[in-house]
Image (cartoon, rainbow, N blue to C red):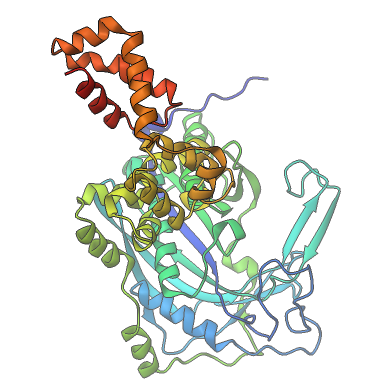
Length: 497
């Protein structure tokens, strides 16, 4: 049996135009659930944060969470949406084991927020992503599939359900189709989710921790030939990192291009993204709205946000992330291109916090965009998860500024911090790493190097100071790399003049 050869991404884009769309789910950081008083703390023992309402027991009646409604309106306003003067909840009917009521209380044709947009910067271009709707609903429970190799139901020997998450307020932000991005489609998808995460984090309504599932993204992708109608879309479900959003789009572009180029047809379906391979696999056929048999929720009154209240919420919105970044760019005295590198690395808040901890913008950028970015690029992780805090970086730079470490020695100390050996001062002491500051010891090392290399010493005496590199290397070896190379060079030249 032969295996289809997938085209390169560049070849796929040369033939087809991608159309993307994103449906992002954000768990709100309220103290209680959407329709009951159960707590929402992450990581509690399974099925300990439940009650008759969120378990859907007979006779239990829901009451809407005002804090969740307010948070949703604030998200809509921050995304330039219009806020409905009247809307209501609906029942979305479907059966999953993690849906205790066999329906989800959501919004359908009458969402709370509509017709917004979010501008993102990609490769020096501003791309406007239009927001179709922002609506409020409740989250489902969580199913754990055990005994298999993948954590999915296929191959599992048993499945367990935790209903703690069922009923947590969930905001769904749905974009309109994003067209005309060409080869930048994966980068636009990533940039949009990153910007959306920054907006929501700035509002303080969610911790938007993708690794914990409080922000999840469904990525829609379709291909069409230039000038033709849009193709059939697939929906890659529950993508949980910025890098994976980008990879999911790229993977689907390549896969769909292969199918279409060989005369096949794309099936409208949900797909699963695999972090280890970067590929997607088929999940289930995609339902239409009619399959859910939406109808108005009879147990909840409609929502009618007061116009004055909405105006007050709008007036109290925090500074938008894009405006904040521009203010930082000016304060840090860097170019637009340099700021874009900071944004692409996900380092804006980290650098800002490092500066606040007591170092300069240049030093903060040096570490986060240099050594630390290199490490995360190698592992495919996120900067915020590297195991180093802004306070660590500021402390490390102070040790360099005070002459106790060179940049090279500081990188060795950084390795220890990343390995969990403590802060920079602790690692430096435990590993015995410090610049040799004993003048007598350094002078002896220089004199020994001169004595061991008389021909090199003669060249330096004759004015060929570039030959000092050999002696510097000898001194650095003798001091286990813990001497300051610039100081060693000055000492060598002074001894031979």
